[in-house]
Image (cartoon, rainbow, N blue to C red):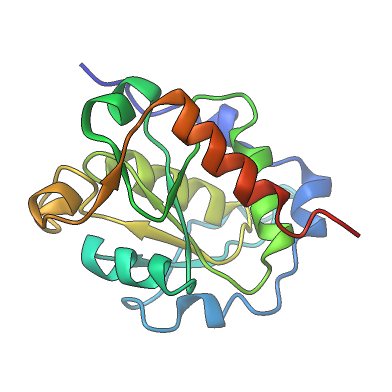
Amino acid sequence: MFPARPDRRSLLIPLAAVLALPLAGSGRALAGHDTPKEGPREEGNGTARAAPFGTLDAASAYEKAKAGEIILVDIRTPPEWAETGVGEGALAINMRDPEFVKALVVLRQRNPETPIALICRTGNRSGYVVKTLAAQGFPGLVDVSEGMAGSKAGPGWLKRGLPTYPGTKDEIVRRLKAAFSQGSEG
């Protein structure tokens, strides 16, 4: 019913983008999260050193997003957003969009000290994306492992009764424009 996880090649970060990422501050990115994990290493083949990442439950993700302590990104697809809405405080960026990784890189460059938390329906896709990008050295990532609908990790955003906004194209575009225009002057 929902798309399977993406091919790992579609998540490869261009080496120049990885080298441009500020790695200092990625320790702060994990403050208050579960024990940091480290993505798998791919030593000896020129890939970036793996970055640590953390996890959050949906309620903590909402509170931290509301307080500006994380950037919350809903990586599901437009039909999923339309069906359930998008978690309040989250940016809706479709992981299947060809510009997905570029958008995360821009968010990281504009917010080098702020963790980027990813949420999907049940935590499977967000966990995969977080581990894949962390393995390539993308710093400051967090997986909201229970997702919107719940999983073994917890009941999820919707069952917890956390607020959502309409998953319409107009509302999503409005919020993305506001988020990506902040700090672009100068």
